[in-house]
Every structure is written in structure tokens, then in C-alpha cells.
Image 1 (cartoon, rainbow, N blue to C red):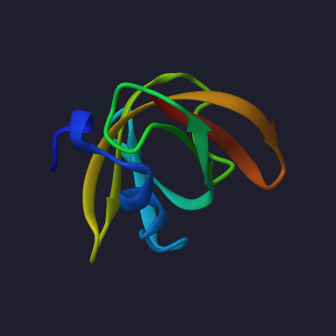
Image 2: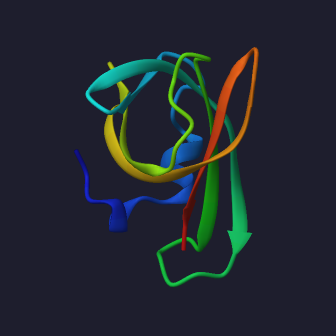
Length: 97
């Protein structure tokens, strides 16, 4: 797992959209990357950015430190907050500044 301070917009844009698992509370949930968006200037290399992640409907609706895993792309430690929940799932957002 790489260090969160080294994450860049380009790194997350290059990730596959599907095939992720989000590990929350010792359980893993199917996840897809909905959007990776630049947010302007920030102190990190490449500037600030956000990542929207859609998680299966059975995932808990809570903020926290989670691990986003992909078999080919590796694992990423993220802090995400819930934005919405419906029958399709839970939408989380991680912001990197």
C-alpha cells in the first residue's frame, strides 16, 4: 500500500472503474470509482482532487479510514465521508488536498 501523501489525481484517474473492494469494519464491499475530479491548487503534487466511490447497498453509512483494493492496481488507504444512500448503494467521497 502506498503512502496517502503520495496519491495524485493522475494515479486515481488511471485506476480501473470497476473491480474494487472497499474494506470497512473488517468487511469488504464491492465498489466502483464514479468520478475523479481536480479541485484546483493544493499543496500536494498535481494539486487537490476528489474521488467519488459507489459502494454496495449493504455497506454501512459512515465516515472513516478505509482501504480501497483492486486485484491489479493494489491497495489505497483513504478517508472518506458518505454523501448519499439509495437502493443502488452508498456514495462516498474522499478529498485529497
